[in-house]
Image (cartoon, rainbow, N blue to C red):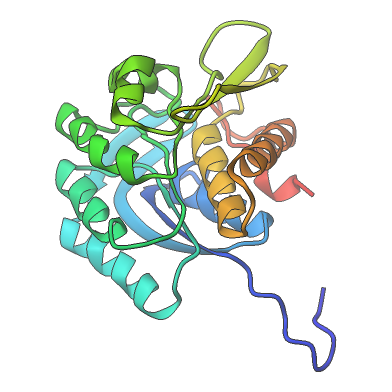
Length: 257
């Protein structure tokens, strides 16, 4: 909708995605840009790694230098500014620490999706990178592990010991319904359940959810409201999947209204 004459347009929330590039467009930076844009945000990026992948799997990964990642972040922050940050695939321990160094100086919401394994099964974070995740989880407003990621990070007890606020995603668990559980230190967990959407076109669900939540937080939504809107967006995008590819196909971000 065009702005009325003489009335300044509302500024969209500025969302910085720090993540890897997915050449097939279903996940990573590409999914983040689509999600942020469809939810009314202004997307900026700091690419951490380049992947050669499609719906069948990842064939090559090349991390960028930590200096280049830091330069991208600084270029965005020093000019455009930022209202929220989403972190996805990092690529190396050095990149994880560079990102943590810069974000520790910011006072904006941060959503950390601790990407370790792609939907296709490809490993996207080695043991040293996973160890470096601890700094990011502590400074993040919300961390969004799926079932295997939560196990790798040390389960609920380890997360509680660190004082981490996290959304335990249940899409990888068995069952006819999907359960997502928000755990905030000192509070009773909040649980959302919904019928499972049976589809193989689920590439990029974690990237999409985390960037949707970041966009909501950047727009000023309370955490639980941002999660509810993010979950609804993911479910709508799953239902609108275009059916591309022979494997785990992309969702239909552009079809969500």
